[in-house]
Length: 351
Image (cartoon, rainbow, N blue to C red; front, side, top):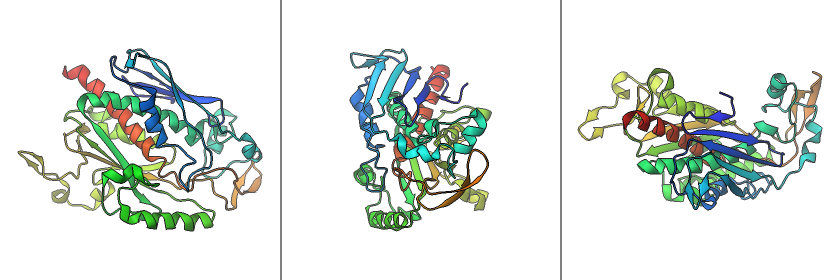
């Protein structure tokens, strides 16, 4: 299957480039008679938009989604759902100096190596702009998860070394960082200002919690639920690591410390992160993603051009200081897409 398509029964193909006329998604396998409106998708896209946070890119795309097919009178029809989002705020001239130069930390070099050419305007297909289509598709996936009352909660756990100490889910979408701890917002803002003044960028950690996932969801051996979730989240460009449950901390535990005791009401702990042997155990699924710093920085960097000659590059244009918080709804969408696919697969063998 081509690398632009995700899923087996609930399949999503995204298309489009950062500076092309539009981008979008085609969703095949969505069950019929699910309520769906463009406004519901729009609400999810609003959480990913740039140009609204003080530390985000100044590119102001409205991200207005249109449903071209697959919905009739407010209900999904069971046929492919096609979504389109037009690019409205494009400044390709900002990238002209990059036509023959590879940006450090970006996919410029590898796209050139694979295809023999690349779209230098904002990274083309490798741009984070592509993730708007994922968020739109994730909104549709949530409609499938609603059949089982499955909720996916995502938030910023850490930004630039400043870590949330508590989780108040009611404030996640009410602050610029999508952080559940009001007590660290000032420290995060100060860290952003400090790094911006240095012409640098920041990374962080996004945490996802899934509630209501039924026990038994997942496949054995090579298609484990945790493996699929890791692959889905790692497919997001800025993500460089994924852990589930205790994650890497498990390597420093004893078996007696890591095992989750079973009790009549379920599990007494959740170091497994809600998944055992690749199959959901009915507990809360807990996943964390490590997000790298944005590679587009205004500091001088060493690189080469397409002829192999050394160059010194200072990147201009409109860029985020960090992929966080705009990446939060993207990671949430990828978890939704994974669970929707596995839920349909589970229903095919369990009913």
